[in-house]
Length: 346
Image (cartoon, rainbow, N blue to C red; front, side, top):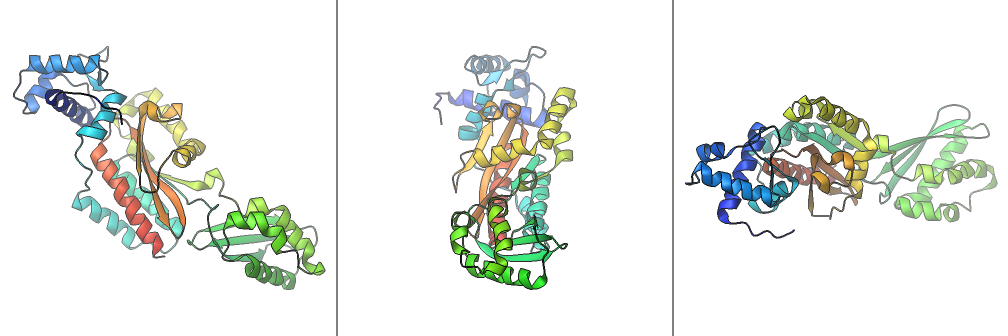
């Protein structure tokens, strides 16, 4: 975190400018700060301080207004040094907990409901990525015959997640051979991580008898498709489009088009949530141009890992830089922690 030597007055004025801008979405003037916040200084003094904060890059002065707005640097200093420690209100906790109380045991449904709850609490775009399958531990393989030459392979992992893939066979199939292969593969592979299965599959199945080699050969040729991560289109749950579009920022047609394009391009969001350097216990708050993706330069992102059964995913929100950081950060932290607990019990 970069260090800045602001006076206490400068810190107070910056804090209140950000509070007021978050509240109103309008540039903030010195009279407004002097009137609504107890600083015991005149509007002229506030104006001079705001001018100094603009000179040092914490505030900006839109051409069409006499007021000021926070810059990325201003928001960053606020989040790191001026904001109160994130604490979720009891009512918000109750909403989250009650929303998850009656959810089924299916991981997919838990993640979907959690995403909706997070968006409703923060009024931002909520995103949750499924855990990476690369470190997943195989629980069971099921093979379902679809036609005389096609099978559906159902991969269940210990965390409760399920992946399916369709395979095409060269020769016609019968239920006896499929049952044998299903039992054979479960005996050889259950309890292993996907990464280990991909590396050692050929070695582990080399003793299969000649009658079943054609089926095993198809599995061998498809190993990277079967024991790999979900495709991008299935890796992320995004909720809250209606919530975020209510924000004043999107009254501007260009901004509206930009957020719609972002929502539709899941690959950008998956990249954001997977490639950012989030430690196991760390929260990552990226503001404006701190985001690697250029299309996110007008947004803030708040991301946190959740973990269960040896796998991990990411929970977070994307929204305008003018967001209620204290509440949003608290919500992401609480939901990530609760999600880890709920999923660990499944």
